[in-house]
Image (tube, rainbow, N blue to C red):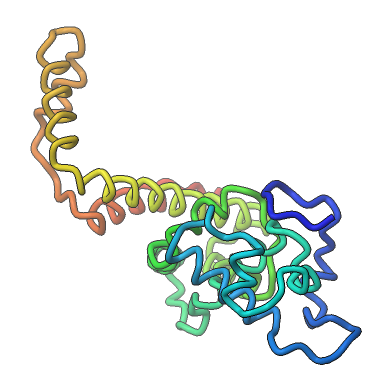
Length: 238
């Protein structure tokens, strides 16, 4: 039975999902395509968040009957797979790699951050295991090529890419949450007062020292770069 809910769809067949045209085999030629439906779902998520994406709302976006959409995506979980791969097509894979794998991985992380900030629902969508589609696989291939100079085996390269993607997704999710919190100056001031009181109580000397340290640039870009440099600099290639 088609469903709108989340959770893994155990019957999802990767070959059926990614190696077919995505067009119903029977009946008259439809006035829309799987690509059109996926793009509408992405636009809805961009505007209203992931929770707003339901088969009914997507059907309304493309002017179709909701039951007809199930021929393209039998449930919301399948639709999320399609959405993730759709936006992965925005990631450039034609830029020439420099041969400096650390610099190339940093560039890849920046591409991912830009993509996730453009689609704020993406970090949450990536938190569940996704079956990579053609666009995702093309970017993975690009990232693996960037790591060729490391001499690491294939499994280690896959682990590093997963680690890098998880870092970027977690950082962007935190970045979006911080930006939302910053829209409330009263809340920020209250949090600052609270931390100052805790640091002054004598029971948290390490925290007091940390909070009294000279400040660093706190722009989202500068913070991301600092964290990314630590991650890439600490990767073990042995």
